[in-house]
Amino acid sequence: MPMLHFYRVADLHTSASLTSRASEVGFEVLASEVCFNIEATAELSLADQTKLQYLLQETFEPQNFSVKPLISAQGDGDSILEVAPRQQFTSAWSTNAVSICSAMGLVQITRIEKSRRYHIKRTSPTASPQKFALLVHDRMTECVYPNGIASFEQHSEPEKWTTVPVLKEGRKALEQLSQEKGLGYDSQDIDYYMRVFKDELKRDPTTVECFDLAQGNSEHSRHWFFGGRVVIDGEVMPKTLFEWVKRPFKENPSNSTIAFKDNSSALRGFQHIALFPEQSSDKPAEPGAFREVKRDFDVTLTVETHNFPCGIAPFPGA
Image 1 (cartoon, rainbow, N blue to C red):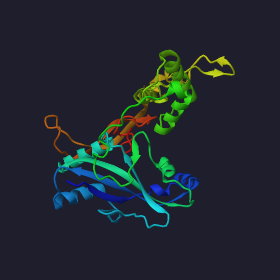
Image 2 (spheres, rainbow, N blue to C red):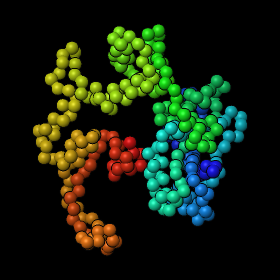
Image 3 (cartoon, helix red, strand yellow):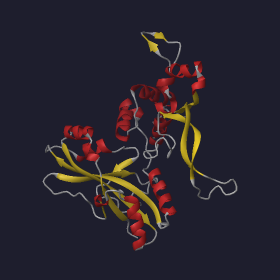
Image 4 (spheres, one colour):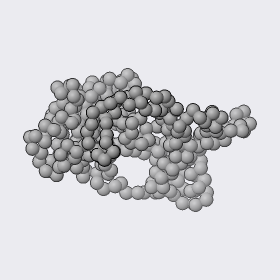
């Protein structure tokens, strides 16, 4: 059956940084909205549609929610640019949204993906929408949808792998691939991969290998920068940056209840009175009256929003 679409006003276009960068590539960002693209196995009843709209609209701003687009191109150099997650994989946001729908009895809904729509206007006759698109989406996990999302089968076939012509074109081939696919290779990465494939293996790498290397050898995974040797004015320092960061914990560990566990930590806190529901030991799931309870509360800190979703960063996630 046809997909459902709901629209909600957004303030993406109010970002000062985006406004400035858009101006540099010849565009003015006039407005923005999000579109909820919904796949269902059966038609929703009027009651189910009301439930779904209640879930998706802002609680205190129902007027900013609609079954029709709230922004549209008027001509004279303006257009709508829409970006959303790639369709090969269901996003984590969709998984959570579908789970919530199921808990509300909306079992017909199998997938919801959220796209971002920008109303843009050329301020330069040579401005290219592709350049603006680079400012508002992650090329590795998202793509541009010129005609919106009419089906989640549009990109069901994965892109075929190819070889990267390193033997013929040298480092230029890797630099171009990194730029086109957002792999984030730096000069040291390219030097190393050139030595491995051109000098040692004497063959061209595949695009699959290049993607895998971008992930496996990233700072996120390997911590080259934090765990590597520190050389200052030609002298190798006795500790890595990681060792310096961990030094206070090693010298005074009693202040932390969790330290350096998947980029998260907790400092020893204090006892605090909070409201908790009463629960009997034989029926822990039943509702109960709230009572004041004294509990230990530790202060949590995180470097990254790793565990999606979590209490530290429940909305953006990982």
